[in-house]
Length: 75
Image (tube, rainbow, N blue to C red; front, side):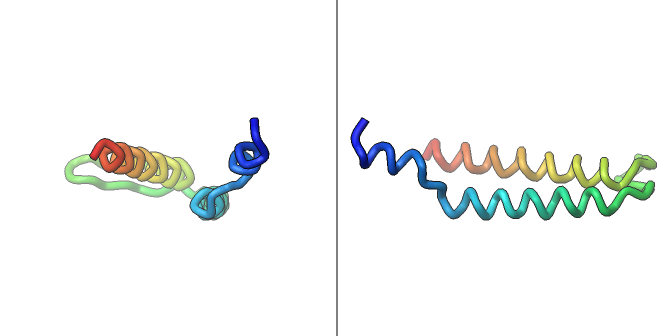
């Protein structure tokens, strides 16, 4: 492996740092909001801890982002 290859593998993209910072903020937000909430969507009504709802919404957003990115890389 050359010096350029070694340097390239050690650098971290700025988008990775931004993603990491957003993940830390999201986790802090989840930890601070632990009360039980009532969620209503169409005819469904569910009571759940807010941290669980926020974590689920975060996961859904992550999956949607991954699917969109995957679709863009195919083009």
